[in-house]
Image (cartoon, rainbow, N blue to C red):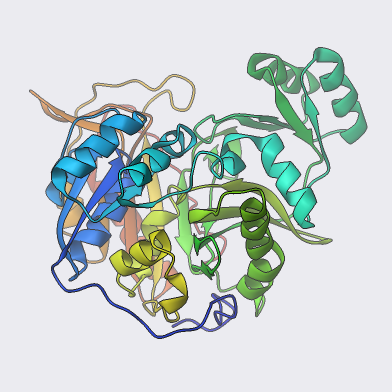
Length: 437
């Protein structure tokens, strides 16, 4: 395990001995079709406790580790019916849209354990205004903000906070609903396009992602990671859903995860529970390390993408037991997490035109060649199989991870994998984790 500078000494854990699932006895359904879901399905398929993994709707990469079922992932009734028909022991909901739509509630109503928060709890991601209210009530440090519903509200907020302007769509926007700009006109245009927005002060300093498993009482943090939101090298260009990530973060101070767990994650889980619904699933804290200390940029209600890909490459603790324990209120029985003594870097390859208007249909080659390299894994997101073979079907197409004993080695492996993959108009950043290595 990494020392406290990279992780946590688990003081946020409850107490109790480990309780393992019976080997080869568990069947799991993963909901979603992206790179995050591919990483989750692959990790679950490697778990000795898991007999079968299914995914709905999945993608061509997920098909190599799970049986696919073509249903609408935001249709709670369809998901519940499928889970019952398959006889699964656990449903894992990957993306935010099904959670905000109440899919986890529908699954629990038919008596099947589900990893993912209820619709009410998922509002911590589904509404920026709700998340701000939770933070204020729980005493969690965050940016000062105003909820704006009219042009006059927007004008007043922009004048109050000044440049750089931070304008956030109040609802879901697939990671692309935030504009940070010094251009007042661009900030006003984004606010007008979104309708209800949250405008807040700009937070200086590097950003860090810290995920934590929760069963509504016990909070178990993972390793901190860092992702890269801007499209272009040097943190230039528009915001995206994420163009790369890496872990662990050797530059963090000792005790970082414990401080965030005690001051941010546990208070947030407690506040959501106080409002009537336990937070069961994965709470994602986006953090800014400002000159005035750690402050919360955002909360998400699910595993982040692409941070999940490198984190699961490093996790040694079997994933199925962790997710099942969280879903069934037994997370206090899970011992401290075990991590590989290694580094992992993820690089996203995106489609031409992403994030504004991704072009689909380009033929993809070289994936098998990349996966043959030592330490390299390729996770599918926006891909489909057609008459011409594997083709582009979405904005973020593939995530290539490189894992090695050192951060420079992990970067070399990831970019060696990227170089093997070809499709017309592909976009990627060349500086993922470069400053840290």
